[in-house]
Length: 503
Image (spheres, rainbow, N blue to C red):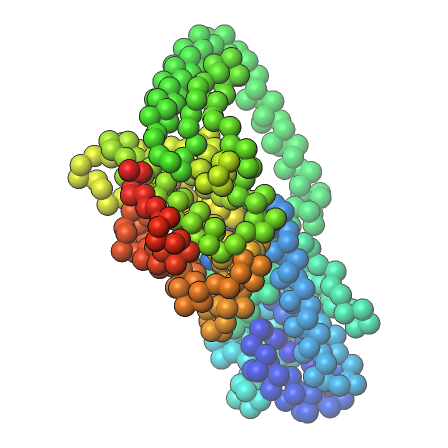
């Protein structure tokens, strides 16, 4: 038996892969062990304790996410290599949008003669059995060996889309670092992965971009073709531009008129807001298209938090802002969605009373009597990363629940003192470990831990990716934990309560 090399297909299940690697090492004692791994870029990435589609994230967040995934993949393959002790071990990986096709591509590119795999499903794939001898090993036990490749050994060649899609990379034996493209993931190569990769449009896009980079000659031809087409289209458009110019001018003017009308309606609505915890609109400067608000001398809540803030003040401010949002959401016939609630948009007056400001992204929604359940409208995603409702970000549907999501983030930030984008993820982990006290901001003083934990859990509901799980800001019963904390923080003689209408 030729024992020059034995290849082992590995995934992310370390317990299963460990037993299979040790089996191969014991049964091929004189062979060089080569680990092969198929990666497919993940479709989702972490976002404020939940997940968001990768294609909707900004470029910087994408780059950081792929970097974390690459590091995890490097560590995983390095740990697998270490299982073999002093044996000579190398590792190869590629990115692909289909696990089986990826393994077949690896087999062809590396000219693999035999491969050990831990999946019965994959072993039944004719394309793989025709390429090489397949040893099926499950949990360290040899199940079967295929010999189909002996009948087709003369037909193994390079070609087909799966070969073009993949590009093989090697894990350096000395350095332990990869030479990968920037967008890799550590998704596992197992039966579950094979099933879940069917709906993978974002992955196809990534692969096509990578193909273009790998084949400049093809890209060059396509570029020339597209350029010629664009020049032809541009020439035709120039000929008809004069005819369409008048119509376009009318359309633009009509759009401007509609926009100006909408702006005037919004300004009128904002000028009528009367709540002790909302900044007052003093006027409008038409020349600079600016709104003029009252002056609040103590800066933003973000600035104040960095200087230290007692838990009693934090709880008071949360209660004040909840009443402000309830006021906005309960207005009729036009409910108002702020759409950019964050620490930097909560201002403090001379008495450190909080006021919600910056209504530049606010939207008014006309509420009909029979449409009270869902209040929202479609618009372009806007707001601030970390506070923005992921559902709004993905669908463009802005609802009152979008403000609830942002308010949940504000609550978590005031409870923990953490300003990270993943504050919800950290809080959720603390709840899971029954260690909420460990994330409460000690600089705020001695929190009433039982009520603080209840409020933290309520904030996590606000940050749920399922909008139906978020508590309505106007539902007083949902906010009992906040009300209790507010009562504990405020002496009875000085207690002030504001209802949804600020009276």
